[in-house]
Every structure is written in C-alpha cells, then in structure tokens.
Image 1 (spheres, rainbow, N blue to C red):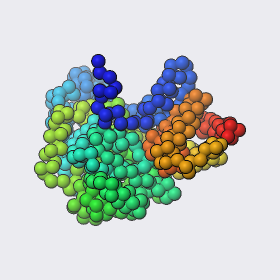
Image 2 (cartoon, one colour):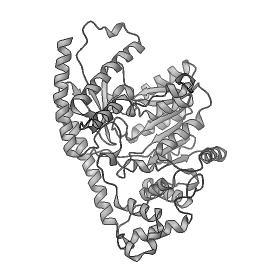
Image 3 (tube, one colour):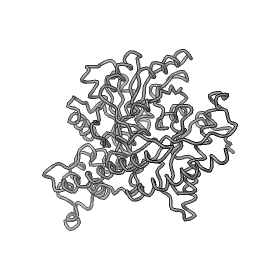
Image 4 (cartoon, rainbow, N blue to C red):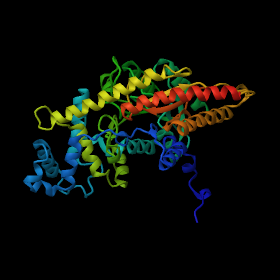
Length: 477
C-alpha cells in the first residue's frame, strides 16, 4: 500500500492555502446547517453571479447541434448566436467531443490574436497563442518549460496567489520572493526587487523569470504604466523572462486606474529581448466561467525552436478542453452593436462590473472603520488583503525568535483568528500567511464576490467579531 512517505517529496512540500483546512472546516459546518459566507476563493458563479446568457446559449447549441435543425427550438436563441454557432461548426465540424489541434482550434487562436491587437493597438500572431485549461495551466506550462534544475529560481510577489509557490515546489524549483510595497498601493518596488535577486544569486540560485499579477491577487492593486516599464527594464537587465498574469484585466474599478498589458508596454518600448508569457482566463473578468476551464497563453519575443518545444509540451496533454476553448472564443469575440444578443450582453456585463465596484467600495470603506484593521480599497480584481492587529501575547518576545520561529508563531495566531471568525460568524477567509507577508504583520484575504447584502452583513459581523476577539485576547494577555 502506498503511504505518505512514499509520495513525491515535491508534492508534500507544495501548499495551497485557498483550499486548506479552514475551507474544509467551513464545508463541515455547512453540512451541519451553518450559513457560510465563502470569501476564500474567486469562484463567481458559486457566489450567485449569473452566467452570461450568450455564453451559455452558444455552448448549448454546440453541445447539442441537433437543435439547429429544429426551427421551434431556435426561436429561443438570438439570431446572431445561431449564426455564430453555425460558423463555429463550419470551422470545427468534428464537434465538442473531438480532440482539437494541440495549441487549440486555429480560428479561435486567430480571434484571440485579433482581440489582443484591438485591445492594445499592436500586432499579434495566432501562432504564438496556445489555448489552455484556464490560465493556471498556462502558468504551470511556463514554469515547467523554464525550470532546468532545483537551483533555477522564479521571482514571485509576496503576497502572491499560491498557484505560483505550489507549482514551483511541485516541479522542484526555487522561489525568490519579492515583497510588494503595501505603503504604495502594493506596487512593485525596484529596490526590493534588486535586494531579492541579489540575495538569491549570493545563495547560488539562478533566477530565470519574474511573475507579476496585474490586477493583483490577493491585493486588488492595479499597476501603473511607470511600474510596468520599470519591471520590463529590470527583467532585461537581469536576463529574466516575464510571466504576466492578467486574468483580472476587465476588473478595474478605481478612478484614475487603468489596465496596461505587458505586451503593449513592451511594444511601445520596442523591447525585443525579453521573453513574455502572458495569461488570460474566462474564469474572472465578468464571465466567471471557472468551471469551463478556458484561457490562453500568449508568447512574445520567443524563437521558433523554443515555441516548437512549448507546442510539444501542450501536445503531451493532447489539447485543452473544447468547451473551454469555445468559452475563450466568446470572451474575446463577444456580441457587437447591431447583434440581436448585444443589448442583453451589454446589460449583463455592466451589471456585474458595477456590482463588483460597489462591493469593493463597501468592503474597503467599512473595514477601514474597524479599529485595528486597515485595507487598501481594492482598485481591481476580486480581493482585498486586510491587515489586522492583535494584542501582544504576555511573555512572548518575538525579537528573540529566528525567522522560522516567528513565521510559525504569526501563522498560528493568524490561523486561529480566521478559524474563530469562521466558527463564530460563518465568514470563510484565508490567512495571509497562505500568500506570504512581511514578518510582524497579520493579514487575511477576502473576496467581495458574495451578493451585496452578504457583503454588508460580512462587515457588520467582522466588526463585532474583531472587537470581541481582541478584547478577549487582551484579557488573556
């Protein structure tokens, strides 16, 4: 029988906090009848966000194309959706149950290239686009391709989405954490980047790439144009590839903030030496189609022989799932003005984005009213990284601890807080230690995806809980 000791040690080292023990406890409590507000993961449709009509209409016709032969059934569908379904079947007559080309259906990759060209006003090549099972598979593919041995290192943001740390551990690489600048709206700081890479090199690590999440997860920050230019320059000076996680590009709410793609900025800089992997997904934005696992990876400044190896890598998995490829097509080629389905599409899109903006503002404003808590009002994405304070433990001198001991101590305090929050209020959040954070700070990540009334209820419950919990801690201390 296989025991834990016989498993791959890389698997044992990998951690993924957003589906950790607090979520498991939340699910157990829910089974017992407790109302749970799930704020642990960016899963929009699980939190009452309705799917967009045109995506589901298209998928239903393609999954069961016999409907196209029944005029009575077609009365349920807008004319342009029927025409689009017929077009898809013309380009991909084998249907949804057949494998596609390894990189994805060619006309969809062409549509992705046209989307990028229109978004950024720059050339894009369909042959440099690989359709993936969500952005996660693209990220994992890039890490696997760049990782030659355990000494190869990837600069990843702290705090970061744990996909990066878990994948690097799983594949046997080395993490090079760089702290985001919390005092400057979570932007990247060049001095911190230099300090991180210098320390890594001194320790014998060979840096190969830098991962950047924009808009940010878990921070909700939107990077400025100047910050992106700095990152590109840093990558060039240090011979790094850039992995640009841009899955929240539609989720920008704050006045004065704007999404700038790395592809566009690199084109404007005429940068031809830095290899760019950029990722997008149907799971976020306003689609929220997490379950369909659709997305793409675009490659820039890459040699043909390297591209061939990445296509081969995708071939080992045969291809990404076809429903996800179609959802990706619908993301990059939505209904246009004049189409019968456009009015419904535009209304649903606006409603979702307006609701997210409102909930981000409510969450940020109300949390900042709680004594001992602070948060940057999310500029984008779907998350807030909340900083909170707890009374000092009596007789506990953290200055005498080494780095590992202090991290373990703070992780324990943070986890106990989040578990108590769950038990008492039903609010499920993720301890900040699961994403990384500076020593001496405590955080938790929450989404603002639940319905507005639940967000309003959440901040009321959070305020009462935090006041009670810190008072009780003070008495014990």
